[in-house]
Length: 352
Image (cartoon, rainbow, N blue to C red; front, top):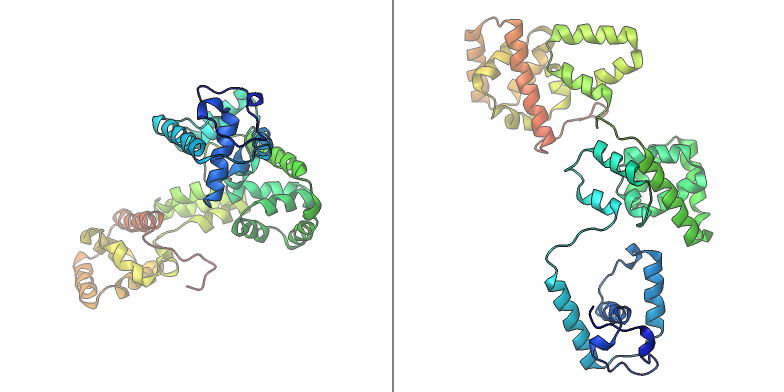
């Protein structure tokens, strides 16, 4: 703020009856913080650098009380400066990357970090808390039980519980016991652990693809002709049984409709499907696919189901390529509705 003078020019042992221009920025900040706390505001002062937190505590400890005129003047100046701000920037590399998250590629963000050097200047636990569970899990698997216990203690309870549930039983028990020993850990040690973990997260190379390779292959095979799908899966079985098994789990085809789709969601899926396409898909669903066709028809209104059955008889035999294309269109619609949150698919391990 303009007009500030060094702290030494103000007698802090006496009541502050000075206009704002006679107060330092630290004194004004202390006044505003004290006022907000007195009004019951929740201030995230822990997000400030340790040095600034220390300066604030020292400044407040040297002050006594402020008269109403000075308080009003400080508030007016504070409000004026806030209102004059047209645009603010986050400050710091990590805060800037957080603002740009989703607008720049992960590869660009990783390159910027590498060129700038990994230097955690903000609270590292903010970075860690915003990290997906899948990326935090390897940290727990490779760190000691003591470090893992600190990590779990700094996370939201729901996130910590999810992480603990993904660990082997013996490892989870060791970490849970180690949590009981964290009460004596000094704050500076917790801060060092946070910086170390955050640096590990920043050091990881960016992935070109967000989803798992098995999921990518499964997505491709979802819309591939049945003959192609089976040939590829047989080849994968010969090359890598474990990978082939993961691919099979990620595949969702028309045959999986009865076990994965809720009957009540069938109308949501079929309402935007052209009826001719629906008739083609159901008419082509013979043999092993007949249960899927019956499932869809049984979930419709009786009148609509009868109408479609009549059209299926009139349609007659469907060429395999046409049938696959029609069934893939239904599967694609199911996937779209799932992504948009309109429906929820039953996972294979659920009873339904």
